[in-house]
Length: 392
Image (cartoon, rainbow, N blue to C red; front, side):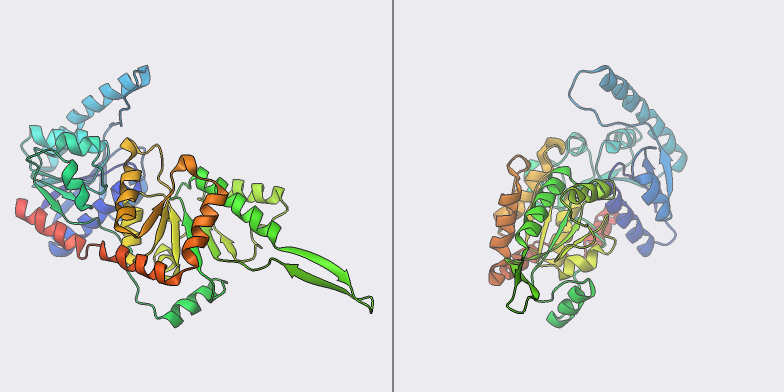
């Protein structure tokens, strides 16, 4: 099988494309697969790292504002359809697979013109503009959320497959989870809250977490008294923590967070019950041992949380295309396994209270975990491969 995958921009678009390509190679080792992307996004790192060839075209996302910059991008994107046609003619694929983002407009329109069948994979609850534009002529549109079916044009051939992810549910025993927490330097008996905002971080979440930590440290006051024998003794007041924090503010924002905490005389490497790291490389393990997740609500993040089965507090990125992150988050809130705080409403007191409210009731958390995991779709890559094969 000869396959072209169109994927560009963020890991949420590129990683599903790589997972699909890996499954094709597993099932059909003789297959030839190339990726088409741009020279700007994460595809330039992730695709070659995964062992696939990346072809580049000059395609852009177009906003609705009437600016000279947008007109230039529009003309370049139109021209990139010709660039994509040239690549497709040379490679002669049996099928083209688009995994989301502006790159799909150029590549899939080129496939249309050359009468090459194409499949779209849409990870979000709210399908993007590119997906809606290209859906009707697609051989199939594979969706990560069943709710996406209602938001696609009539006549679209839609199949709910789920979204591919490397994260898996690890069947740790209660004792193993306690041991893992201790390995990270946490108290095995206290709830662990995992906070992250993606590889680039999330400024509003980071600012809120800084305030929560400042308040937390302030409440851990010490007073000194002199006993009758003139020996000084220290008594801790309000030194009980309701929960522990594992927080990744993002590699680009880590130093700024460190500086802000230092202004309050707080050492980022020495905070009781708090671990702060630039980036979490062992996300699978931490998702499996934590008690609650606080994060943005991109499709990939939600897929991973559902896969391990965790309760979550989602703070949707307010500038995501067509506000799709809020649609993603609301789907899980409606199911009963998540709380949603809008970015405009976010503050340290609200988030701290929401976390405390959830972690104080273990039965509620466990029930939310079960609901979350029940939404996860198993054997996603196999489902997608079957649909690809049915077209080819």
